[in-house]
Image (cartoon, rainbow, N blue to C red; front, side, top):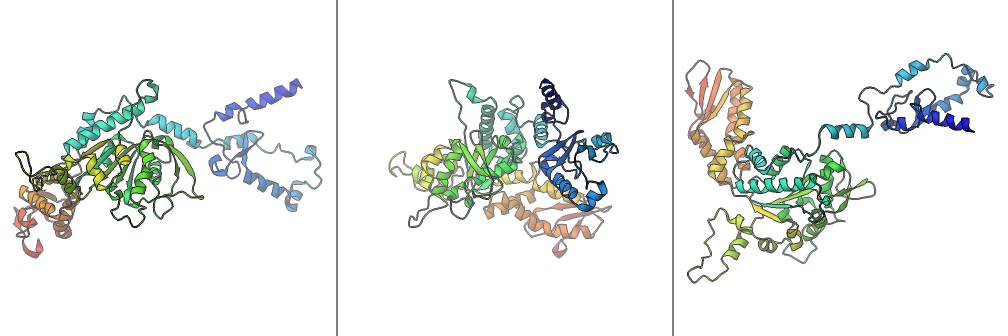
Length: 487
């Protein structure tokens, strides 16, 4: 009996057996017959000589042994025991062991994931940039909005400092996260600000559209779909997703509808569904789907360390703010007329939670977004700076395109001001800049490749205002002014 016990212990410790040494191996088992890995073919069957075979190939082998032709070939018709089994000495087991070594780089998914985490951590509190460095990095891409960049830099720094220092270790004080609500007119940079921030901090970011969310049970996306997008952005890594950022755009479309005669399945009910996500709780999330059903796998995500940023234009809230500010009597020394704030460009900065409630946001939802700040409407000077100063400015993009044709593209100051004026008239913020530039650059991008002698193009105010043409410099020639249909 003791000999049998010692033999079992020896087999358990042998490499390639089911002992602990094999469990610690970071490489996957490979089927000797079909060469599939363990993650592809399933659990392997271990045979003597460190040979592993998948269950499919083993079953095919048993089926082949019952084939009369195979039995005749191997002389198994009179097989009665192991002593009559064909001689296996002709098989080179050393060659088989050599072939069974996993190819370089084929590792277990768990081992590969651990190595990836070790190489590049999601965050390190020692390398987390200070708020002024975060803002300085944002300045390279986002023009203006100084107050908004300062607020978001401090909020993100405090949030991830709280995450990485593990506030659960503090017995006296538990630091809560600070979700944010950005209010700003269309084209002021709300979404672009969050995208830039996520790229700088290297964290998974999910961009969700509140207009697609509906109450559970109705056609549309469930509120958990915002976490499904975050999980997808984190490569289905739950731990990484739990430290990500979720940006819910068009949040103002969830305001309570004034008409109460019909059921509101995409307004107040969605606000109520988002409460548990914003607060921080364990949420069942469908993997790779936008709604829960029996055919979709589920996973649990804790939203305690997920930073939620909501943004919306809130059209019409200016009137609510003006009504509140001018609600006092129109008589007396400190009275203000009803049109006192009509020309105030910073009227959104005076927004309060009461204004948001009057707009249609429920108090429970507003309470879970403690940081409320507004973005300024872009003026002419800011649009001119947006054209030329950011690292990926639209003018630099067109200059790079023409460099591929060995043509230099330049803009004078008058042309930049004319572009900004036309963009302001469209009242769509920075988005209008590209539409204006696309219009006047169409002819230039079409005509330039026709002539290889063109070396430089100067865009003037007259060309933008359709009163002249661009100044085109030919190679080896001083300059020529093109006007009319050739411009």
